[in-house]
Length: 82
Image 1 (cartoon, rainbow, N blue to C red):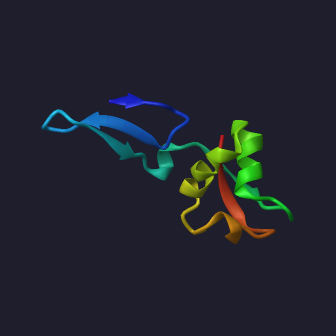
Image 2 (cartoon, one colour):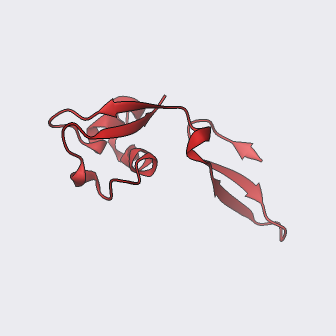
């Protein structure tokens, strides 16, 4: 199994030889809790964390309680990867 510590996914080889993505459990990802400030978006947080706002999906993936990026509100508690 190949693992990238920055990703919540690993790859594995299925019985038929195909490569499949396997989602890690939350306990396998080091996180911290962040309290959202007014004006924060997943896009600008991703830009600060990853240097690329298009990586906002990583933050959405860690926070399944929030359906869409625009649902983020001040004082929400979200998971941020370490």
